[in-house]
Image (cartoon, rainbow over all chains, first blue to last red; front, side, top):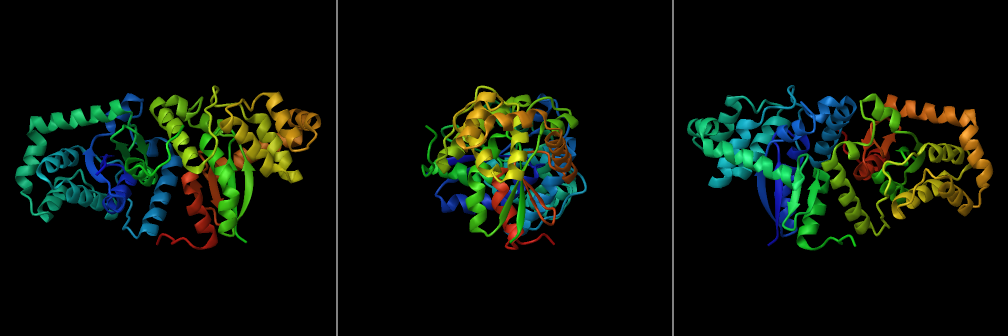
Length: 204
Length: 204
């Protein structure tokens, strides 16, 4: 079965939409998804941005929030704009990498996004992450300690972010096929899956 | 019949795709399209950009050109990346406004986009615009003179660009419904038409 890497940054609104629909959409097209957390902050910083482009360019930000409300309404997804944006996603991203090794990354990532953009809560708060981990039946205290202190986990996240940047990823969500086609944006999910499964027409 | 304003900048690659498919897509959903040329340059300049974001942010530009090739391949649209980007669209935009008053804006705009992104030619060149106007059976010499000198046409384009900015438009293509919903991007065309025709679910 073809594999598509789903690169996601927890602070990204459109990645919430992608995360909530990618498993069923990919299954329908017989594609396996590999969930790849990374941080956009260093990539944005490298191009001179010290915040989200949705904050730096207010007209674009205004459109994004309205567009998110419309898309979530169409897909029947809960949506609540968080008061803090963008949120610090460092600990959540490290937890996701632990979950990737231990087999619980998908429900964890979906729960983080649902907390942040479905309920409008702050995922940088330890109590938010504790509640999510407990809700999955995991040992929240031990995992939070590892996410804060485990050097192997820290360095894996740095390596993932560098890998994303080296592939040419500049935003989230991004979908990358095994032959290194990069598709950026929730609205490119179907195109990426079609490419991976061989259903897409290739440019000449 | 509901009306959607199609705001377009001739220098914009994704607007080529939108221009080539908007009439048939809108007709299928019983929506009338009003073609609204404007200039992105002053809007970009107001947010500190002196060129296209696709040039200012090379990773984004690289993705866009590859994405354009993929989309055009999927839609069976000719695509050739022009050597000059972005192209100066001032005279073409003024001609489009004359065409709007005289009833030939749609075939003119489609021919400009096809020349620029289907054939990869430079639409800032007078010979390109002459050929397009002649191909439509229009008086190219007289129209080019008007586009260069007619103060009413110049001021109409300035007013259109100011109107776009005041609506919150920050990119091309943008689609705006009669109740002032702004949808940015070729991939939002269907959502805009569904909103206009009453088929879309409204956010609560």
